[in-house]
Length: 120
Image (cartoon, rainbow, N blue to C red; front, side, top):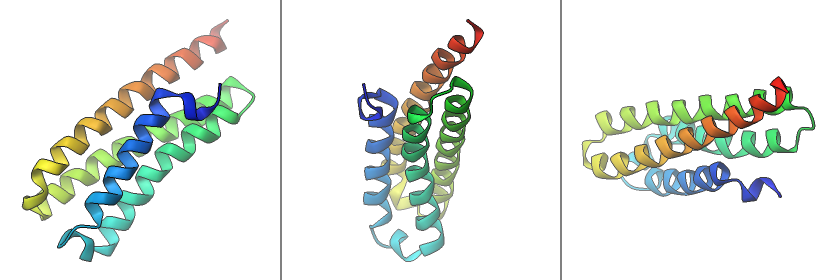
């Protein structure tokens, strides 16, 4: 098994692709700071899942998986900023928030699973 096989990584990849797509649309694409932060946060989810998966010790895995979950919350929060600042993107943001929620739930499951190995 590789990190690419993890459902949470696949979901994070989909979310990242969708974030990039959204942030390339006008007029949102002109807000470089907001777009860049949303993109970096989404990439952080994928990257931290991958890095955590490759760590050998469960405690290290948990650290990276929790950072990924934090980045998912950051993306979700930034989606509210996008929705409030660019109301025309509201429908797309609603769909993205659902993908973000799914990614977070999958990460929570991965964290619980990894944490249970620490207890044994």
